[in-house]
Image (cartoon, rainbow, N blue to C red; front, side, top):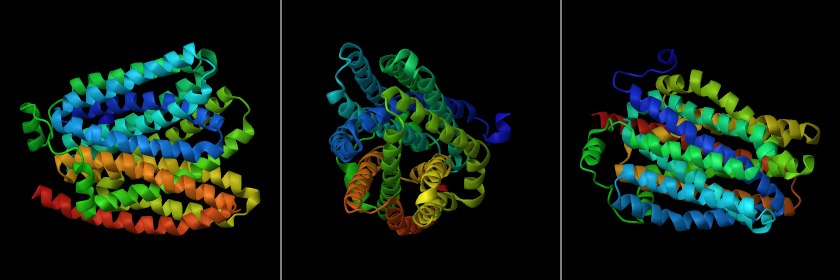
Length: 422
């Protein structure tokens, strides 16, 4: 049955299914935390969200050299369990804090919001770095869409668990469940077969670390036009996402009075997005990347954003909320279904060091920089009296530039992939 959905060649099944399982439990763990984080963020107040985004950026910037230093000195298959178990220890602390200090929301809300935002980017970036270091570019085009399904189904499971149990068992138990799922991912790493890439397999057999310096991820990005354009792609995506996130926060705060109801509602929204995403990833993503190439798939989300923001700008106040919800759901599903798998394929043609260091810098610092630009720009434009429609019309031309970046990256990846194959 799986062979009808994805083209898996001989010798690839074990790695593919383990990657699927790995990503399932990783995103299930995160999406349990996501709804809790967003509910706490709403409780902290929409006006305070820009400060939470600033705290996330600074925390990400502080941790990035530490992560690069660890991966430079520790073999990858030891580095990943170390990082994941470090985050797991923090989860146990938050579970204890929620249980023993039930009235600690004043400090717990901002700390948990920032920590979860950092956690998400780091663990997912490390996962995809591991995938691009294990699979060749040609394999990535065939398999990354299916592997992404594992994450999507895991996100659905995490959202469903939160929606069903948030009111029954409370946040502390949900955090412990998230911790248990994170430990499963560590076991997946320990059982993963050798890499399909000759250079990576040789390094793993000798148990050699990646090497390099603590700041080489940053310097490599600045020295490579290809990595800079990936950075720009990520930046523009995040700015648009942050603008939509702020609108969501205002709607939820107006509609739901208590924290648990907000958590359950946000979980149901996530579940809707993930249901649409899994259909795309199962039946569309892999085939589109294989037949049309990475560039076309990368261009889908920017093109969708141009149309969506333009529609929001001209639709008028009466239909703005409905249009916003539809656009937000389609955009998030388009990211998980198309942009994200294609973006990860881009890293299959860079050096092993760049897969963990430059990629981690792009996935964390560049992502959160986009958060900052989007958050403070939205706050400034709102303070200046601009309505949702006016802000949307500003975001539309930015999305057009994003579309050009996507096309350039697709063409550049094709050239680099041919060179690697040769």
